[in-house]
Length: 257
Image 1 (tube, one colour):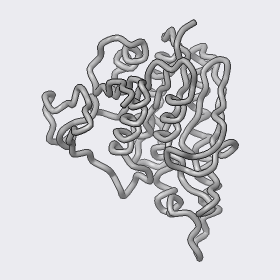
Image 2 (cartoon, one colour):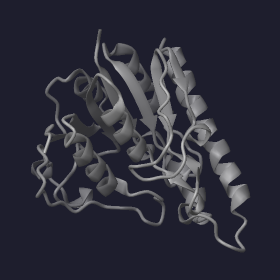
Image 3 (cartoon, helix red, strand yellow):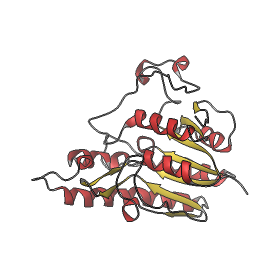
């Protein structure tokens, strides 16, 4: 029986983050084709991009309940938008012959961060989950990032071989901002003392950007599970990473320290 691989489709990869509710259909199609080609059992977690971050930022949803601000209508809009994006993803998977089922976190998760609560759902085929607005016992609600979701799936799912991040427009984690980087600035193997200058679009992003991905990757690697970050615009790299073949990207070596 093939092993399990958890894959994160970045929100900035599958959407245009600066254009409201704008999906990148070509990228979604290429990633769905990869899902149909792999020999592994997949758990796919996708980000929100322009279907979640822009409205969530305007509504300050990551801060929880704020008196005097009509956040409930914004929550409803963000959740509906996430279903619209997910529908495109599910349709693309189906068109590529992939048996998949989606489990919106609003239905089964509470809280946010790496220790959010809720039993992780699984499908006999491909399991699909996404970043979402969820209830929280302390601040009423909040944003559960897909990066936190993949960490729990990778650590807790039996038979997981690796976690793969398909990210937007760069080959992995870079030592300098992307607009300053040369090919030599790619961090090919992560170490605990690795230094880098990630760019976080705080005016758009309501989660932690590349630094959250690095933190969660290091957490997963500390449980003995390999993590790879690759450029999602190159579908062959995504497939190679899933299959465990050599690939250009950033590797977090597994450890049990």
